[in-house]
Amino acid sequence: MTIEFQGAARTVTGSMHLLHINGTRILLDCGLFQGKRADAIERNRHFPFEPASIDAIILSHAHIDHSGNLPGIVRQGYHGPIFCTPATKDLCAVMLADSGHIQEKDAEYLNKKHLHQGGTPVEPLYTAEDAERSAEYFTGIPYGKEFSVIPDVTAVFTDAGHILGSASVLVTVREKGTVRRIGFTGDLGRWNMPIIRDPQFMGNADILLSESTYGGIVHDPPESMGDELAADIQRVLNRGGKIVVPAFSVGRTQDLVYALHVLFDAGKLPRIPIFVDSPLAINATDVFRRHAECFDEEMQKHLALHHDPLGLNQLRYVRTADESKKLNDITEPCMIISASGMCEAGRVLHHLANTIEDPRNAILIVGYQAENTLGKKLVDQEPEVRILGSVYRRQAEVIVHNSFSAHADGNELRKYARQFDRRQLGQIFLVHGEPDRQEQYREGLLEDGFANVAIPVRGQKFDF
Image 1 (cartoon, one colour):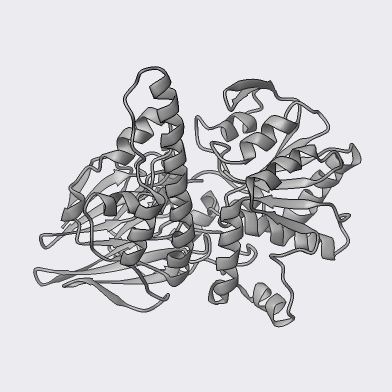
Image 2: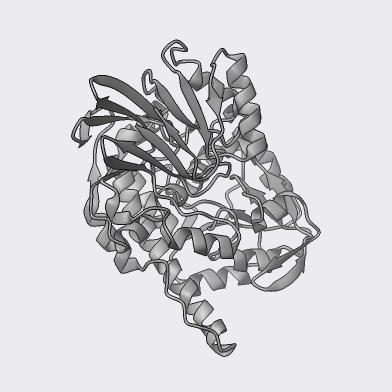
């Protein structure tokens, strides 16, 4: 057996890990790489293997850096099963269609620019139609149910507690008279977060592929989320400002809406106009409502009382571009929640351009910001930023709330890892993290008694 790392190796995007077993190939995740445009186009368009040579794909969850190139691999010849949880299947149906639409619009924009300059036309990475075609290959498997991946290989999903439907997977391989178990954490969530359940232990493994996004970092505790958020919002309202929230359409938007629901019900904030300006977030919220099996006990109680914590009375979901543009005419205090979460595309760019130079306003950051993104530049408090091709002076306050992170922090990663039997777990590979964070997590694992912890580079292979 060989494990080959082809994505999310010493970086946090483009999750893609290849298992070579008994002459077959199983792909764990097939995500889009997100970074500098030229690098992203090259890596996402050209797979490091022949797509038709893959026998099966196991998908951990719906976030685009894990699922986003599934339409691409199907477009290029893959026609095997894509195993995931039922909630992930439904989320991918809306997310990948949205991604395909973005790819088409991106190519359309580049073609206008290139043709004006005499360049060569470009094709989209994939289309919305490709995304719809890829949906035919998805198979939804509930948590805890063992399923056959290929002959002599079975797998089981456990709840990773990251977003709706997110899973860790334990793969059991029978090869040449031996049984070996390979664990893949996917993205691990946090304990005591709203809406979805806490991470569940996958069971003991011989080899573990673990995410490491926040190795060495400690988040603010979830318990402090509400009071700190209320204080920050009230401060902006007192000066008559608007609050723009770049938020991932799946997970973070719903978490924020839920937190606001709790604050308003408790009388800790005055009721202000709130707009969710993201068609994808609206569609994803509809998927959330269909998958109550993923909710935690607190959320189940709300539903039993016929509450709707994902649809506040004063909240407006904005679908059309014309409605979105009208939000710029609002002069009274309000909150606009819009994608993308790293401020790299989408409607949030127009809202940022409209508000960033007014010191009364605030930009509320509630998610991870990768290097070289506009969101990271805002977090770093850069005095000037480029938005939609123009330079803006940053006068608005930038507020960062790490307590909303859906990723386990360094202590929580170690808490999860300590559940494994050190005598059985012979090798750990750290993926989905920046090198400095991975090294800090590696040191923590060594302190906890794990003997072999490696940080693979892209393209590296390990034989067992």
